[in-house]
Length: 470
Image (cartoon, rainbow, N blue to C red):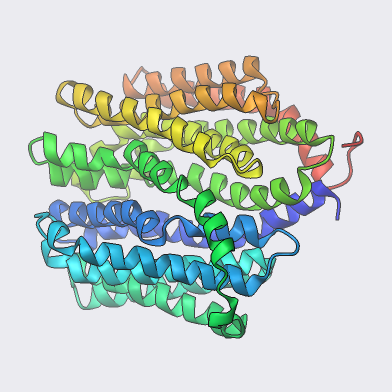
């Protein structure tokens, strides 16, 4: 299959899976503001969620990245990939059990710790089955599972939060049930039990997988520091910080649309990058796709900033002021998306240590700026710290990937798009007279600047444009 057609086909399939799950998060967030009795309870839910995001790579030893990377290679036994994945999760979970006495001392989580452990294990097993499904290129089944998991998660949310009113405990139980059913569904339908044999365990391959995956664990932690630690800084450094952490989490839901776009594309792009990115024309391939990708990201970001106030109006009244945090969070999410794209180059070249080092610098910048800016500017100080952290990572990766694959980033257009988004954000935050009209005009300008790249790439993806040899 032509590389462009493969990319658009995979993008559509992963869109079905990812959009359904991310849409659930987007839709449920306003309902959570009503279903949780206090902002503090919602804040605890957000902190539990972020804690799980931090610990999952540790529990799994980052093996999910290796499952998809090695699983797509020809000549590698699929059974060995799966059994090695189970072995890595088992080792990681034993290590987490040893940390139980220490983690239980964290005041926010002490009463939820057992459920959190179950949540982590089930989530890792579901991720393993999902990635193994992708490694076997069962992409349609992967998409179906995404839809089914979304439906069951929604049902369990209603049951445990709305009907039984179980608060953060109900939130954890709902995710455990939904992820558990998803893992079982994929395990049975794909007949994965055929691969579950001790004979398939391959120590030599496991060592290769871990050498690739383990550097990505601290990279994930540093990513978490840049992306999610803001809520912990806010909770610890500000008066009524737990409630503000909940509002910050709610404000992040609208920029989640960018994450939806990025995740859908990245999951499809990884397969194209691994399977179609080894010929002489891959630099042209990467460059063309990135130009269209940045155009799409900035267009969506511009629309998100425009809709900040209307979106927060659907939350409970005491959440409305969270619109002020959306512009900077949107800019941060845009550059997080670019960072993910560039990370695919490291994955193609198996240079996971570069992913680690760049994210380490970004996390350090974020942590220092959180400490300096939150006392002065409150929650928006945390949002600004996140943006700067991701921007620094983008600059670092744009430079050091030049020695691997020379991507044309169209820096002039990138600078213009960023400037337009910054001006739109400034107008909204300062509530300039007729701000909605000015912001809408800037959205139109953004569309005019980026339309040509998006349209020409779309035509090429659909096979209607004139393509150069790649």
